[in-house]
Image (cartoon, rainbow over all chains, first blue to last red; front, side):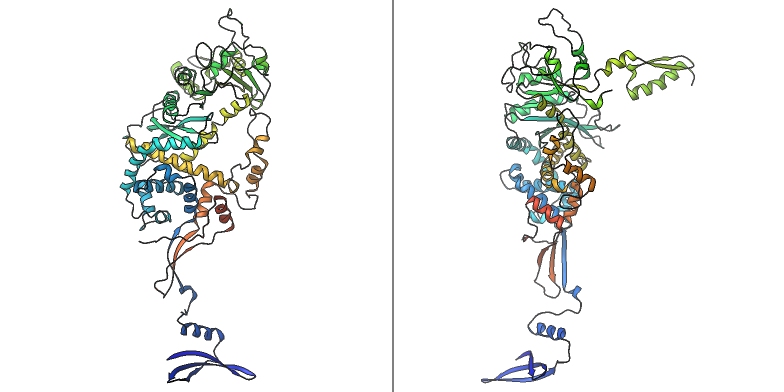
Length: 371
Length: 225
């Protein structure tokens, strides 16, 4: 037995809409009209048809859909896709493991919403998630302690990961940028934390120091932590070690500011390791250049630097025996120094002669700051 | 204020604050203090105003390249700012040495992603996405850095070339987060759960396009809990 709605043509008049019941008697199909629907609006008739076909009709459109759950998703796929394109999962570890997935999730979660480990675990667990990250990575329930264990795991992987990043982003002759900063801690229990010179001017808090190695474009490669009372130059030695031994990159140059790559660091760490460098002179060293030579009998005598003779906004090259690079005998040991320096242009340079050091000075006069 | 010691203490405080004592001659008596400029020293120092010297052991790079390399140390500062402000390295929430070390390393890896995201999303951000034009704006690297005409227009009008509002990195991520992943079912049809992603706005679409992401891709995941 079946019910259906039929439209019966009625010559010139509007067709009759009938709700009919039909059944079979032997080979015959019998029909019986149950109701005449012609007076009903077309929409209602259509809804009747839908229901008879097994569809649904609702009294209110807002009841039609039920949204069971909504998670923030757009920023997750943006960051996740970028991280995957960079091959970050494989950078963390070759083998898939719970720790690797947790580390991967924690790294992405920090870009999305930096927070504590416990808060991050809440954001990742299905029960409490507010983004789709945990579900996309199929993490299941994440406990706060798991993330702490993950930190231990990540620390063990750090040398390997940094070496991979270095291999990926550093080539021969790359000029690596290095600088340090400080960050203070509220607590006192961290063994690394110590009172020291705060780069942010924060007073009365113990701090840690961290040094960052970057590519020329600013892409980060490696980070190292130091006790809070470490001075800038004393962090250089471990970076030299890192570059030479761990990364195994030979022809490399370190760019550091004048407070970092100092004359002493150049003499004691960089030159013996054969790492080339770019740095600047401190103001006291700059003044030394302008003083008459200490040993007037030295051959050939060098006239002092005359700052007034420098052209504003231009670069001049000078060399000076007071600040030699390389080995004491003046020969270059720097792997990047392919040839002996040539004297080019510049007013100061024109007055001076190359005395065989491989150190050059670039002297610039900046027009904005002229008094 | 009376007394040499008292005045001395007070003067000492200012001297420590401004750190220019070497340029002044200060005399303190019991009842007054006086000062005068030491013109010889000021002039000697003024000779070097604006002069800086970059030193290098590299003999095969141009002077300009060396100056530029030194100046680009600001990129590391930029990284520090992002790690500290945007990725909020502080508070650490952990205290053992190993955990603090790992936490900072984790922040580095997050910045590694953020750095690449910023590169790709540059047209939508306040970032200067035309470095070449910016570099061409000055004759030597000694001059102060310039922004490219494109970046200047972006900063002035707060609209991008495609007439989208310009975002900062954080607000763009927030904007993208409004694209939701919804588990939807028809009210009285029980086994009909669908995963529906919000239709992105034009700006969100542009961001996904820059990143090479297809947001409407079906997401075969289960949201439970």
